[in-house]
Length: 554
Image (cartoon, rainbow, N blue to C red; front, side, top):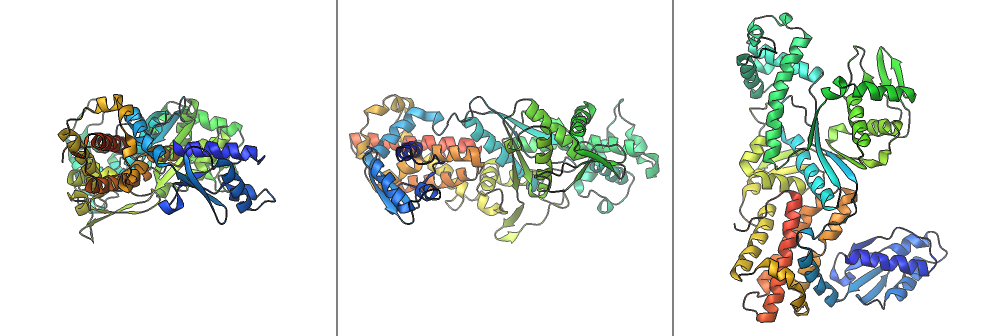
């Protein structure tokens, strides 16, 4: 990777100058007039030096200017160095992509390490709404990236099958069974009526006789009975949620019911450990987690309620204790923005248990708003208050759902245009990208190219014939993929993959519209076919990481 080569060059140059070792950052420039790469290292070095940033920049540039891969270097105010790479170095990148094939873009930074990625984790007290579904493609694609970086990844889901919410769902269903109005219940929507019908008609020897639920008078069913109805409903809803996730191309390696941690004694065990650390206290009949450390900022929270029941937070502490105990070196939780208050508590608990809280990274995503032709979309009748993932998947398909979600930084709101997601035109970004892949496949088919043979004989082609701006720009776009993958493995900004895919597709379309491939002459045709095969490899690998299909025909 050229970027890493430049970093190594700079590290060597700073050692020669006797400068303090600093983290070297090298980035792509905003345009060709500024070169291909740039660094602000002189500015960082100058903070602990008597020399000005420009003086340091000139010294570094002088020591690097004769390296064989640089065409030239420029020093710019207030202390930047711009690197111009020789065309022949870029041209050789095509051969490297062909040799790497399906591994192009991958690295081994996570080799030998375990990563746990928890995502979706929606409470199954209703259908999976699209707000929670947004976390699915984010977590799944991030897991793909981490695997591409050598991590052993576990995709996981924690679902709430106990507590007041489950009880309230049972109460709503019981009320509907007994003939009370749906709109007056805690949980509304047609799905509650559907659950009531299923539960009323079902029978099991090891569960209460559902016919008793139809008798008037809520007092006939105690809290345990309501919880039982709620749990049966949760089981039904959770099956549908996993089905929706599967429709999005998501499969979980491990699924944990929250009750498992209480039943197994894991929660009790972890609370005993916290008590021994002196971070629990009794107050108002409840047990509170109260470490008063840097993460919690004096905000205490209940772990055992006054009735003796564990809170969700208590069970979640046990869940994260399990992750670290099983050897995770990286723990990622993809949660809705409404969980922001949960983050400092969780980090404080992990720290109190003796684990490194810096190994936990929480991605908080914002909500999704739907539009159709610029107009807001009404809420779902089935759910009562939101749009379900199932509805959107049926209308626009998996690829559009994943791509449109992943086009946006998790921290930003999404305006999801349902009509745009269905368009078969370049206005639709996922169609535009997939069309580029299909277009390349069509060209290679017409040329009767055996891709494996091109890979084997990649050293025989004359890449120095690729001299136009369109060809060089396409090569430079292709070669960005390893840099982006490396960055995402630490920033977790997986939306950068969609930006890359769109820009790569755009660069390819411009190349193809301005450079003849078939019939260009034997040597030039071979070089250009190699280039578009390299483009196909980069595009395919990117779409694979996004969990989006790469069609050969459209």
